[in-house]
Image (cartoon, rainbow, N blue to C red; front, side):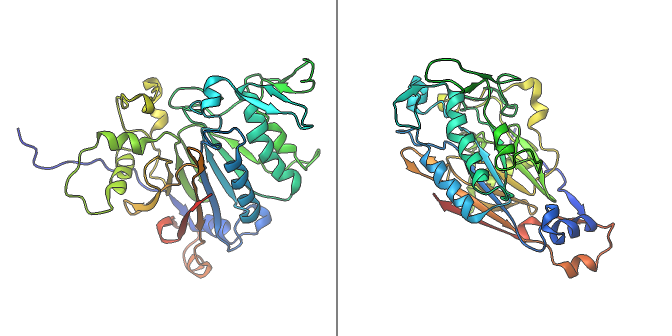
Length: 356
């Protein structure tokens, strides 16, 4: 038997949006969470967020300084937030310094997340309560504070009602929580406003205004690259080809079984395999990978972005900034309000991959 040709899968239909909704998203007032004719700015970054020789989380602090400056509308952060492969975390040598400089305390992974991730995000809103940036947190299989199974549920508190320590030197410290609830009240007091932090599953499909965004923190690109066989590809097209597999097979993880290498261990729960299928072809697919960073148009309707890792070993890494420009007002006004249009993201997005 000789194969004559390869019958590839077909991606799901891409999303369409009514002209009325596009007009509201793109040219509505900013106080209604619309763009007012300005670009929608999305920042994407992936853990680890601290270097292999430190638990100071300096790359994350640098990234948050960039957020203060750029003020993106949405920041998509994929784990690991507390990396199980980091030597100090793997050995249990997790120490936090007291604020008054009076020594160190050995703490849990949960407490490390509270103090090094949740607290620094909270500080952004304490300094400027008017900041309208929203954070989306996606767990990773390497996260010490998340479930080790794919698909992964969102990050959540271990206890429904956090408790307070009563140990000498640790009075008032909460446990059983990730501390994300304090971000919602930072700088607001008793006032209510938009939700600042959204904890979502891995993988997940999101809608930001009209833009459909697919995200997974699992390095499916690297896993596919170890098993894929190809020949006679155009120079520079290999990464696009790998990304194409996800869209054509309508899956955030189109592999079974996962690679056998210990560094690529993926605990896949086949009973929930529908949870990693794509409901539609995403306009923007964010898939952090150890492979070369890139941003490419794939299958006409999608832009696939690998922002890289914020930390690489003992040095800083990369992150991505995406500016999604609005459609022109006169073009929308000339179309019927009930007509549904392609989102056409590749034609109006700029992606910059920057080094931290």
